[in-house]
Image 1 (cartoon, helix red, strand yellow):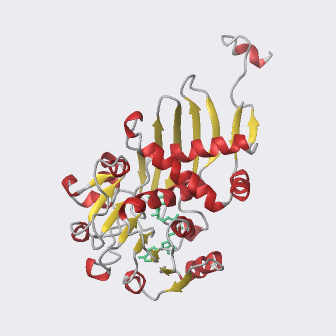
Image 2 (cartoon, protein in one colour):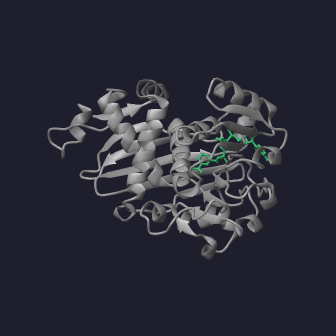
Image 3 (cartoon, protein in one colour):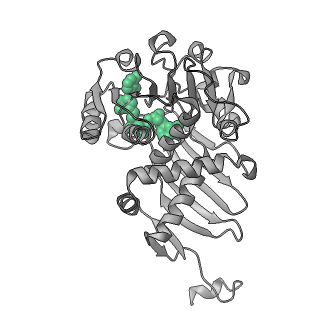
Length: 337
Ligand SMILES: NC(=O)c1ccc[n+]([C@@H]2O[C@H](COP(=O)([O-])OP(=O)(O)OC[C@H]3O[C@@H](n4cnc5c(N)ncnc54)[C@H](O)[C@@H]3O)[C@@H](O)[C@H]2O)c1
């Protein structure tokens, strides 16, 4: 039988496990999986591009498990009352190819994207980072902030969105946290003195949210909003001046901020930092940037964590989606005609 996890099941899972603990489990799984990079069958995702957005299929496998996710990216959707990014994912047993679990992945994508940003920050941010700025207060924003708050001793979170209602929603959702919330009147006001900057805007165009002079030495940037050809948040000129880390070059060079520059400008792929093949941050002044676009290995990691937790806490529904037969050659007999 195959387990199905709905949005309600994932919400229950977070309530049972606790958000901070859940983030810790995902970050640990990501670190473990990026640390065994060579054991995976990897490929860039398949994108179907429309003028209004993209629909992507992302798959990743090792010798035990196969995972894939269906995800969209439609920046205009919120204006029509719909999410920009929605996703579902599947985890299968690589031994026999049978699906084990079908899960909602809209929430899980937000969790794993934030967790990946923190994993990269572990190698690229200053340990004493206290101030975080986020540009774009949409669906991903609170997940990003809470993942970082679980890892760094954040004293303040500065934020800016062109949509005042998104700013209000963000403040409301994060009221009561230990850090101070500072709404800002402009991007520059938000990023100027921040130690960590997250760019989480959605616009299917080339943007330049801020310039190199606008940020402080020693900043770590999680550039996660630009994730599609023709959709970027920082200029090519900006990228030349920072230490650039990506998930997977063949995909990032098409979809990431780095689609604007030559491959040799990229310092490393994240797994190289995790495996200690290359050092991460080397001094307190460097400006480092994790150009995340979302990679299938991250979906694999969170799906395997959720599968284990769902079994442990008996969450989800066992559904008869795959035929069960005494004689595997008698599929027709299943119809009882
Ligand atoms: N890297 C990844 O793995 C990953 C994962 C999920 C989503 N994303 C991307 O992250 C982005 C954000 O996703 P979301 O689900 O939060 O989208 P969303 O539409 O819910 O939120 C985006 C927010 O950015 C704001 N915004 C747009 N342009 C702005 C600007 N110039 N300055 C300030 N704010 C601006 C919008 O008003 C909106 O509130 C999307 O582009 C999405 O494709 C990336």
